Amino acid sequence: MRVERGAFLDAILGPAIDRLSDPRDAALLTRLAYGVETWRARLDWTAAGFARRRIESFEPAVRCAVRLGLFQLFFLDRVPTHAAVDTSVELAKRSSPAGAKLVNALLRRAAREGERALPEPAGDLARHLSLRWSHPEWLVRRWLDERGQASTEALLAADTDEGPSAFRVDLRRTSREAVVELLARRDVVARPSPLVATALVVEGPVSAVSDVDEIAPQGIASQIVAQIVAPSPGGRVLDLCAAPGGKASALAETHDGVVVASDRAKGGLRRAATARAGRPGLIVVRADGTEPPFATGTFDAILVDAPCSGLGTLRSHPELRWRREPEDVRRLGALQRRLLGAAQGLVRRGGRLVYATCTLVREENEDTVEAFLREHPAWRREDPSPRIPDAARFVGPDLALRTSPDRDGLDGFFAVSLVKG
Image (cartoon, rainbow, N blue to C red):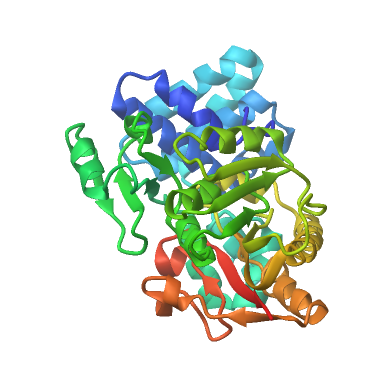
């Protein structure tokens, strides 16, 4: 219910897990929370068929209880049917005794008759795929236009898988091997990623590693993007849209010069400020990225990790698929172009400007870069391959880096490195 009111799932799930003493309860809670948000469209389709009205008309507690019950019935194989029904009914009773009767009747019918049949793909492929893989229909139609059917279906399927829990290891303070050994003593399995020298993939509950100061949560694709910036020794670097501070911290851990983390979000800067401990070269500045308070040519390298729709991170943020609309993509595309325009003047001649997003729509990626290059002919694309292990896997003929859940098992990121002539 809190997620439906606007909370982010990962932010509220951690504290809830910390209150549980049994790791099995933590695992089930995580599976339920992420599963319901991931498969919401398909759950709602079945609920509406049995109730003969849209699930949006249900009271919030009833709606959430129905989704939890249906998810357990159709997507989990270790929860008995009676338990899935009874616990959902009890949850609904807390807020709506009358609504609990609806929950009971709907779930019992679902248990008898099974999941509602989906529309046939021949009639409307986008409609079928949006329900089959539980994505908003507008996004499926866009991906079908931009990627084609085979690529779209592979991406939709990959979005429903749970992504890995990845961490960045501060190699100034420890080694990946030492962290692996530490976690093994806690019965937590961790393995180094071959894609980034700082990346560690952890299996099991993330709460088991929350007190390890030498590591920080950060996706592997995000760490790859930070590598592309690769400032010259002693140079000055700006992370223009730094919140929550992951990439700026990664740069400060590997760079011997100054790293400025700038963002307009006060809350995001608090997290970036916390990351300054042990990183003397990291400076935090609150500023609007479209009007940055820095002199022309101040920086050797700038990262514009632009605010975006986040549609490449739907595995780890499944609630985003129900919050984004086509207008968001248009609005963010315009903002991204303004940010690039503001950043380009702050880079010295011969310096580097890296544009990155965690989305998979052309309007925020290729279209934004092409528009920038038309408006600023002094800039040219640069091949980032020498700075990326296994670069041939990620860098295309247009010299853009792309990662994707279906191809790489990573969040969907886009990045282009530009050099000022």
